[in-house]
Image (cartoon, rainbow, N blue to C red):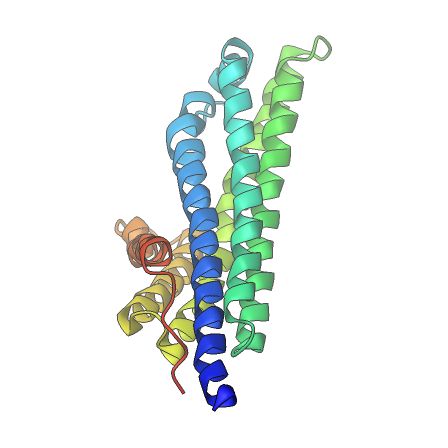
Length: 236
Protein backbone atom coordinates (compact mmCIF):
# COMPACT_ATOMS: atom_id res chain seq x y z
CA UNK A 1 0.00 0.00 0.00
CA UNK A 2 2.80 2.41 0.95
CA UNK A 3 4.66 1.53 -2.25
CA UNK A 4 1.59 2.26 -4.34
CA UNK A 5 1.10 5.63 -2.65
CA UNK A 6 4.76 6.55 -2.97
CA UNK A 7 4.93 6.18 -6.76
CA UNK A 8 2.43 8.98 -7.60
CA UNK A 9 4.17 11.24 -5.07
CA UNK A 10 7.55 10.56 -6.71
CA UNK A 11 6.10 11.18 -10.17
CA UNK A 12 4.51 14.41 -9.00
CA UNK A 13 7.83 15.56 -7.52
CA UNK A 14 9.63 14.65 -10.75
CA UNK A 15 7.09 16.60 -12.81
CA UNK A 16 7.45 19.67 -10.61
CA UNK A 17 11.21 19.51 -11.07
CA UNK A 18 10.75 19.16 -14.84
CA UNK A 19 8.49 22.23 -14.91
CA UNK A 20 11.08 24.17 -12.90
CA UNK A 21 13.83 23.14 -15.34
CA UNK A 22 11.62 24.04 -18.30
CA UNK A 23 10.91 27.50 -16.93
CA UNK A 24 14.58 28.18 -16.24
CA UNK A 25 15.26 27.09 -19.83
CA UNK A 26 12.61 29.57 -20.93
CA UNK A 27 14.26 32.37 -18.95
CA UNK A 28 17.64 31.74 -20.62
CA UNK A 29 15.96 31.49 -24.04
CA UNK A 30 14.10 34.77 -23.43
CA UNK A 31 17.35 36.46 -22.37
CA UNK A 32 18.96 35.25 -25.59
CA UNK A 33 16.07 36.60 -27.66
CA UNK A 34 16.03 40.00 -25.93
CA UNK A 35 19.81 40.47 -26.07
CA UNK A 36 19.78 39.36 -29.72
CA UNK A 37 17.06 41.82 -30.69
CA UNK A 38 18.69 44.70 -28.82
CA UNK A 39 22.24 43.86 -29.88
CA UNK A 40 21.91 42.81 -33.49
CA UNK A 41 18.73 44.60 -34.58
CA UNK A 42 18.81 47.82 -32.51
CA UNK A 43 22.38 48.79 -31.56
CA UNK A 44 24.39 47.12 -34.34
CA UNK A 45 23.30 49.44 -37.15
CA UNK A 46 24.01 52.49 -34.97
CA UNK A 47 27.72 51.57 -35.05
CA UNK A 48 28.45 49.24 -37.94
CA UNK A 49 27.42 50.66 -41.32
CA UNK A 50 27.39 48.00 -44.03
CA UNK A 51 29.80 48.80 -46.86
CA UNK A 52 31.10 51.96 -45.17
CA UNK A 53 34.13 51.22 -42.95
CA UNK A 54 35.00 54.95 -42.77
CA UNK A 55 31.65 55.82 -41.18
CA UNK A 56 31.90 52.76 -38.95
CA UNK A 57 35.31 53.95 -37.74
CA UNK A 58 33.86 57.37 -36.98
CA UNK A 59 30.97 55.79 -35.08
CA UNK A 60 33.31 53.59 -33.04
CA UNK A 61 35.21 56.70 -31.93
CA UNK A 62 32.36 59.18 -31.46
CA UNK A 63 29.85 56.64 -30.10
CA UNK A 64 32.27 54.50 -28.12
CA UNK A 65 29.82 53.96 -25.25
CA UNK A 66 27.18 52.71 -27.71
CA UNK A 67 29.80 50.38 -29.17
CA UNK A 68 30.56 49.03 -25.70
CA UNK A 69 26.84 48.41 -25.11
CA UNK A 70 26.75 46.53 -28.42
CA UNK A 71 29.70 44.41 -27.26
CA UNK A 72 28.15 43.68 -23.85
CA UNK A 73 24.91 42.61 -25.53
CA UNK A 74 26.96 40.20 -27.65
CA UNK A 75 28.38 38.80 -24.40
CA UNK A 76 24.81 38.38 -23.15
CA UNK A 77 23.86 36.47 -26.31
CA UNK A 78 26.85 34.13 -25.95
CA UNK A 79 26.18 33.42 -22.28
CA UNK A 80 22.42 32.97 -22.61
CA UNK A 81 22.83 30.78 -25.72
CA UNK A 82 25.23 28.50 -23.85
CA UNK A 83 22.95 28.31 -20.81
CA UNK A 84 19.89 27.65 -23.00
CA UNK A 85 21.69 24.74 -24.65
CA UNK A 86 22.71 23.28 -21.27
CA UNK A 87 19.23 23.56 -19.79
CA UNK A 88 17.58 22.01 -22.86
CA UNK A 89 19.97 19.09 -22.43
CA UNK A 90 18.99 18.84 -18.76
CA UNK A 91 15.29 18.98 -19.66
CA UNK A 92 15.30 16.11 -22.16
CA UNK A 93 18.36 13.97 -21.29
CA UNK A 94 16.52 11.30 -19.29
CA UNK A 95 14.40 10.06 -22.23
CA UNK A 96 16.27 11.39 -25.27
CA UNK A 97 19.94 11.45 -24.30
CA UNK A 98 21.41 11.32 -27.82
CA UNK A 99 19.11 14.06 -29.13
CA UNK A 100 19.69 16.15 -26.00
CA UNK A 101 23.47 15.86 -26.45
CA UNK A 102 23.09 16.86 -30.11
CA UNK A 103 21.04 19.92 -29.20
CA UNK A 104 23.49 20.87 -26.47
CA UNK A 105 26.57 20.54 -28.69
CA UNK A 106 25.05 22.36 -31.67
CA UNK A 107 23.77 25.07 -29.32
CA UNK A 108 27.32 25.54 -28.03
CA UNK A 109 28.55 25.90 -31.61
CA UNK A 110 26.04 28.76 -31.95
CA UNK A 111 27.60 30.38 -28.89
CA UNK A 112 31.09 29.97 -30.37
CA UNK A 113 30.01 31.57 -33.67
CA UNK A 114 28.59 34.57 -31.81
CA UNK A 115 31.72 34.72 -29.64
CA UNK A 116 33.78 35.15 -32.84
CA UNK A 117 31.56 38.13 -33.61
CA UNK A 118 32.12 39.47 -30.07
CA UNK A 119 35.89 39.15 -30.45
CA UNK A 120 35.71 41.12 -33.70
CA UNK A 121 33.57 43.86 -32.13
CA UNK A 122 36.04 44.18 -29.25
CA UNK A 123 38.94 44.29 -31.72
CA UNK A 124 37.21 46.95 -33.82
CA UNK A 125 36.66 49.10 -30.72
CA UNK A 126 40.30 48.68 -29.74
CA UNK A 127 41.66 49.58 -33.17
CA UNK A 128 39.34 52.56 -33.64
CA UNK A 129 40.22 54.12 -30.30
CA UNK A 130 43.94 53.37 -30.48
CA UNK A 131 46.38 56.28 -30.60
CA UNK A 132 48.66 54.39 -32.96
CA UNK A 133 48.23 53.43 -36.59
CA UNK A 134 47.47 55.36 -39.74
CA UNK A 135 43.86 56.21 -40.63
CA UNK A 136 44.01 54.09 -43.80
CA UNK A 137 45.22 51.07 -41.82
CA UNK A 138 42.44 51.51 -39.29
CA UNK A 139 39.79 51.69 -42.01
CA UNK A 140 41.14 48.50 -43.59
CA UNK A 141 41.12 46.65 -40.26
CA UNK A 142 37.60 47.86 -39.47
CA UNK A 143 36.48 46.54 -42.86
CA UNK A 144 37.99 43.14 -42.03
CA UNK A 145 36.34 43.06 -38.60
CA UNK A 146 32.99 44.05 -40.12
CA UNK A 147 33.28 41.19 -42.57
CA UNK A 148 34.08 38.71 -39.79
CA UNK A 149 31.11 39.91 -37.71
CA UNK A 150 28.75 39.63 -40.67
CA UNK A 151 29.98 36.18 -41.66
CA UNK A 152 30.06 34.85 -38.10
CA UNK A 153 26.34 35.54 -37.93
CA UNK A 154 25.72 34.58 -41.55
CA UNK A 155 27.52 31.23 -41.63
CA UNK A 156 26.42 30.68 -38.04
CA UNK A 157 22.97 30.33 -39.60
CA UNK A 158 23.91 26.73 -40.40
CA UNK A 159 23.98 25.84 -36.71
CA UNK A 160 21.20 28.28 -35.81
CA UNK A 161 19.18 25.95 -38.01
CA UNK A 162 20.75 22.62 -37.04
CA UNK A 163 20.12 22.96 -33.31
CA UNK A 164 16.39 23.36 -34.01
CA UNK A 165 16.17 19.83 -35.48
CA UNK A 166 16.78 17.85 -32.26
CA UNK A 167 14.70 20.41 -30.36
CA UNK A 168 11.73 19.94 -32.66
CA UNK A 169 12.21 16.17 -32.83
CA UNK A 170 12.11 15.81 -29.03
CA UNK A 171 8.97 17.94 -28.82
CA UNK A 172 7.23 15.83 -31.48
CA UNK A 173 8.42 12.49 -30.13
CA UNK A 174 7.80 13.14 -26.44
CA UNK A 175 4.47 14.97 -26.90
CA UNK A 176 5.38 16.91 -23.75
CA UNK A 177 4.72 20.10 -25.69
CA UNK A 178 2.35 20.80 -28.62
CA UNK A 179 3.28 18.60 -31.59
CA UNK A 180 2.79 21.51 -33.97
CA UNK A 181 5.34 23.50 -31.98
CA UNK A 182 7.89 20.82 -32.79
CA UNK A 183 6.90 20.80 -36.46
CA UNK A 184 7.21 24.58 -36.78
CA UNK A 185 10.63 24.46 -35.11
CA UNK A 186 11.85 21.76 -37.52
CA UNK A 187 10.49 23.80 -40.43
CA UNK A 188 12.38 26.78 -39.04
CA UNK A 189 15.59 24.75 -38.96
CA UNK A 190 15.12 23.81 -42.61
CA UNK A 191 14.46 27.46 -43.44
CA UNK A 192 17.67 28.58 -41.73
CA UNK A 193 19.76 26.04 -43.63
CA UNK A 194 18.23 26.88 -47.01
CA UNK A 195 18.50 30.62 -46.35
CA UNK A 196 22.19 30.34 -45.44
CA UNK A 197 23.01 28.22 -48.50
CA UNK A 198 21.13 30.59 -50.82
CA UNK A 199 22.94 33.61 -49.37
CA UNK A 200 26.43 32.16 -49.74
CA UNK A 201 25.72 30.53 -53.10
CA UNK A 202 25.19 34.03 -54.46
CA UNK A 203 21.61 33.27 -55.52
CA UNK A 204 19.44 36.36 -55.90
CA UNK A 205 16.26 35.44 -54.02
CA UNK A 206 14.27 38.42 -52.79
CA UNK A 207 12.28 36.43 -50.23
CA UNK A 208 15.30 34.77 -48.65
CA UNK A 209 14.87 36.55 -45.31
CA UNK A 210 11.35 35.16 -44.99
CA UNK A 211 12.70 31.60 -44.92
CA UNK A 212 13.72 32.08 -41.29
CA UNK A 213 10.26 33.31 -40.28
CA UNK A 214 9.08 29.84 -39.11
CA UNK A 215 12.14 29.68 -36.83
CA UNK A 216 11.26 33.05 -35.29
CA UNK A 217 7.64 31.96 -34.75
CA UNK A 218 8.69 28.58 -33.36
CA UNK A 219 11.32 29.95 -31.01
CA UNK A 220 9.04 32.61 -29.50
CA UNK A 221 6.29 30.00 -29.21
CA UNK A 222 8.78 27.75 -27.42
CA UNK A 223 9.82 30.56 -25.06
CA UNK A 224 6.21 31.33 -24.22
CA UNK A 225 5.32 27.68 -23.64
CA UNK A 226 8.34 27.05 -21.42
CA UNK A 227 7.64 30.12 -19.29
CA UNK A 228 3.85 29.71 -19.00
CA UNK A 229 3.27 25.95 -19.02
CA UNK A 230 6.72 24.45 -18.55
CA UNK A 231 6.42 20.92 -19.85
CA UNK A 232 3.77 18.20 -19.82
CA UNK A 233 4.11 15.01 -17.74
CA UNK A 234 5.81 12.02 -19.34
CA UNK A 235 3.32 9.71 -21.07
CA UNK A 236 4.29 6.11 -21.59
